Length: 206
Image (tube, rainbow, N blue to C red; front, side, top):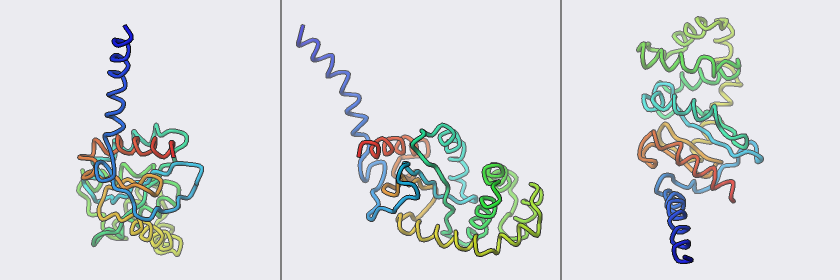
């Protein structure tokens, strides 16, 4: 009987051991060489590096939205716009304008849809101003913020962070400034947040 009980317990533990061994450095995520300090040491920080114009970010958005809406209380989630290519700067500035106005979460879906579904060329200050005005923002206020020190300062900070993370594309998820998860490391967008959840638990157990 004791042998049967032992075998049963082992059979229960094996799936858990397999789950625990699913991901490791180079398999699911990469460890950031020099960890980047997070804003709040009392929270586990999860940051998505993105670009509004990225089709992969657009396809990940519903997954991100659902995950972030149900994020654990000890997790702090935020976005970080990247500028890896020509035309990305305008979208990064638009993100910070919306963030400073406190409306980024309200217009995020509409902005993604305007670019990827409606195929609008929102790749200039004027075209983005038109989009923001349609969403209730004063045009003069948009232009003032778009060219403000506050926005440019945040852009510089974001660029420094992204370089420190070693990220070279989007979307990318950074967990607590220590681990970088991409569709490539996670083997697809659908697995990204599975790896993120694994890393959050790993951080809890540090």
